[in-house]
Amino acid sequence: MLSLVVLISGGGSNLRALLEAASDAEYPARVVAVGADRDATGLAHAEEFGIPTFTVPYSSFPSREAWGEALLEQIRVWNPDLVVLSGLMRLLPANFVAQLAPNLINTHPAYLPEFPGAHAVRDAITAGAAQSGASIIVVDNGVDTGSIIVQERVPVLEGDTEHSLHERIKPVERRLLVQTVLDIANGLDLTKV
Image 1 (tube, helix red, strand yellow):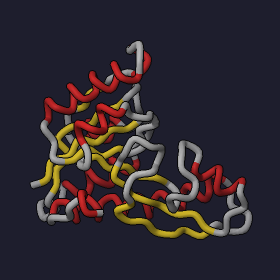
Image 2 (tube, helix red, strand yellow):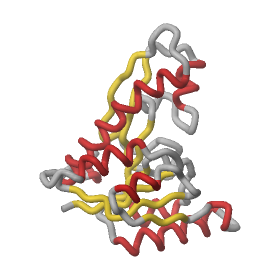
Image 3 (tube, one colour):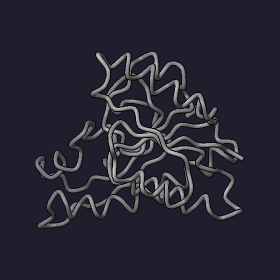
């Protein structure tokens, strides 16, 4: 059984998809804890499913490195097989990534390497892109530059806004994440993607 710690910053819709998948006895992964860098509304999903939560507020630390060390300490308590960044809106320090790689994955609402960064959906709309997408990657020290595990295109429709496009990307992102965790539980080697 693959054990997961999921890290969030916001509403946690990807987290919820994982929690729902893991509630099926046949799904070979379990979320053991959920962490956040702020008082994220998505922590309520974990509480609803009876999953322990922790918060390591970024603003409480003098540097990204100090925050990363504190976050790593919290994660180590749970000894997970895999850490999932699910809308965590912080760049992680290099030492944090080095300690967990390659068992550290991230979801991204674009077809990487197109539109990396925190405003991927808005950037796709601004660029007049005909399509965007969703990607699941292995985290490295760049901004959304890690090895791509899986991705899928999502068309940009005439009249799309940032909100309407993001609402169509989210279900694809959730499905890809649930499938990726399943694949990892079934032996996908993240060192070979």
